[in-house]
Length: 130
Image (cartoon, rainbow, N blue to C red; front, top):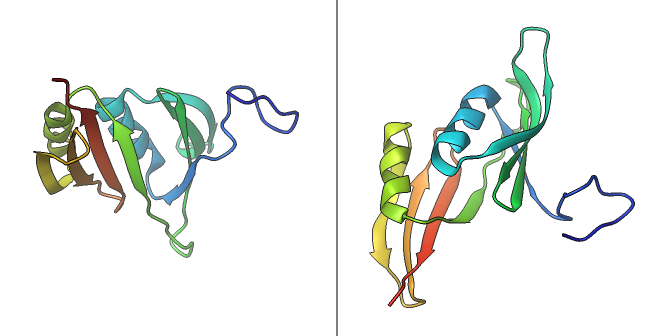
């Protein structure tokens, strides 16, 4: 990881920043599917997340709670996983929609795509071992 005076420790220079409703549910979703770890958080007096940084392996997802009037933003994310099929199965159990079923591509990867309840596309990939 690059170290700069203006970066918090162990923070990449570029990371995704999502504006979502119900951050607590999103944090639970990413923990269930990708073992995401909550590394930074700000909560309201009722204990609901307002902002959070979630670590998935060596990547950081920064998320913030939107208001009804805020512009919502979705993203398309690529995540390398050990088993594409297992993550797709877990995603369905957590309310995600399968956009593309698992299949082998010409790049030597097994891939699939799911859409979470916030509208984000999660492209899942795993290198095919011969």
